[in-house]
Image 1 (spheres, helix red, strand yellow):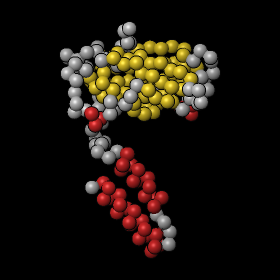
Image 2 (cartoon, rainbow, N blue to C red):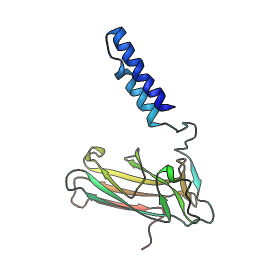
Image 3 (cartoon, rainbow, N blue to C red):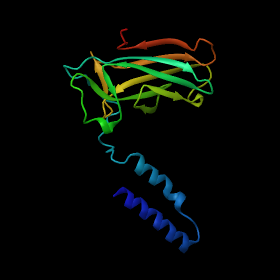
Image 4 (cartoon, rainbow, N blue to C red):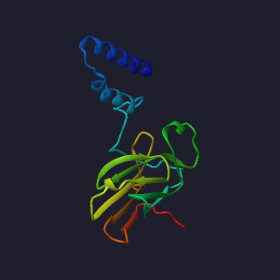
Length: 179
């Protein structure tokens, strides 16, 4: 259905282009992006700021972060995760009985930047200011609620200084990985 609507928008754009003598496709581009970017996502469903306790019987997820300078530009972030299935929503129906599943939210300097569906992510240098910055990752259900244990969100935080050779100032986790 969404593809049909998208094709109709292009057709309407072509018709109006001929009638008005000007293309209107750029005017539709943003609305088409919005429709596709959130396709299948009920905006009322998502609980970005809500927290939910890890269900009983599941192993407690462990999370720690590692950050490395990229050889070309920016940084490479590694999420060291145990007892949590980090995956995209289309795999939500396949459930491991002992593990929570979902995705991670990446925050840089307090602003949510993106979702993470895997343990490795390149972070462009443009995400950061010169000097001190904070990288925070939270573990979330597929409905975007943050998972908690003992009323603390499952998260890890790196404080870094982009101008120092020793990049990491501090590395904290509410549920660190036990080696």
